[in-house]
Image 1: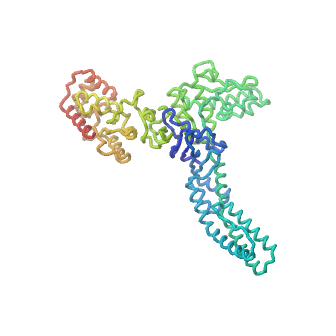
Image 2: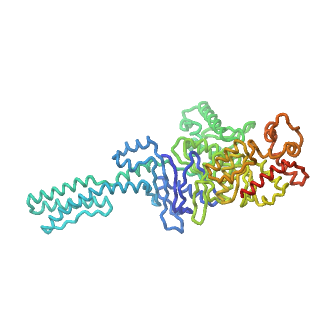
Image 3: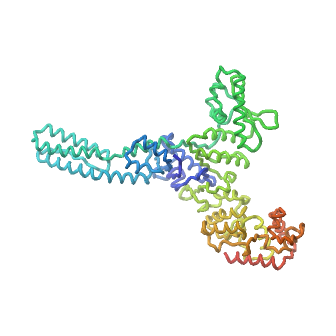
Length: 618
């Protein structure tokens, strides 16, 4: 069973989270502090059957509604076949209950039921199936009752009040009453035969009445197959420097170390093993885990060693180029956290788990957080992982589909699957940083009217020329640079989510045209809001300068014009492998320092025409 989506109601700060759909590998709950990210993870943890009852502390104080945690799972064809074979349902029940995607919900007392998508249709199906049987039982009961009324004998008829189990009990009691009275009173054989015929009819239909037993059997079976849910809110179980043989199997980090390194602890601590054999076993184990750990920890080259000293296992960390070995606790707090994180999660690989991690990497620096993301990505092939963060270093700017926004409003904590929808600026900070913007802890660069650019060279040229040409109509417009045309749709989504005005300004090259088409066709941006720097094909921002101005003021005459090749300015930069952002910044600084730059009419016209288009678009 694979988790597909979830919804949480009346749990701590959550009144109704809305549905959260999981990403294909990692699902990231991004949001600012106190938004409710931890509560979301705790609620998913409390869905696990190992939690017999949801803690009363999870109930929101101000809410009288019942706590409800819903998880929806997909079933593979093999999983469905195994369940069908095990429970042996009638085909009709299987079709109604065992869907390819099933939803279960849990209440605060630990009871599980199917969600309405399965529950309601199945109840309707059972009620419809039973209606004819109940009608026939009722008709036969009336015949029997009318006979006994003639001889002044009162019998209580079976009463259906929408509870099948109670109704079947009533039928049993009714049958016993009728049979007892038939035997106690002197009734003619013809009358007895007529009553018995009606009674047999009731018994036959009674056997056909469908109960909800299959429903509850399937709930119990699926409950037993719910993936193991593990919440890591902290990794405090650190690898010890040494541990007695007799205590090794009781220490979780030691067991994790053994699992990853393929070490059989029982064999290592076997008293029959001589020191040489033990040394070789531990040496092979050290080599295996060090090679694996090296794939994830890229800060420096380390070896994880395990050896023996008398009746103790000894763990050390060896750094390349240094003779001494270190105790794990002598390394930085960040390294200790990462090692604990690595050991715990790698040891879970291959198990049917849903791993929940609350704010991984708080204690490690940015580069190590990238290593954490690498570990999580490698494990996501074998298990589902959901983690919360407000760190941009745990967000891959090429995988924004992983992000789910967690927000806290007057209506409680909610989860938004579309990252641009109704998100405030604090919530989006890590996302904006991840796509390449350095806003220096402030969103002052964003205003009511925004011009989203492909890159920083566009930003510097347009900012400089706006000042040079004194375009007052652009004074309230904010230039927002991305890191390439492919990042513009994401920035557009965020600006749309903030409800701000914008245009997207793209180069008129193949990439710019493709991204522009995506904005219009996939993001439904009005065509008037998608502009190109020029109507001329294969034109980039540098090509708005005349050739003379470009060589004189941009590359400062350091390289003579390459007239015979008739290269465009942008192609010239590319051919000569020049740093276009640095050159653009230098140009901006010249204008900002009020240097008197004489620009040609061609350059002034090109930029003036572009600025007019931008002003008109707003």
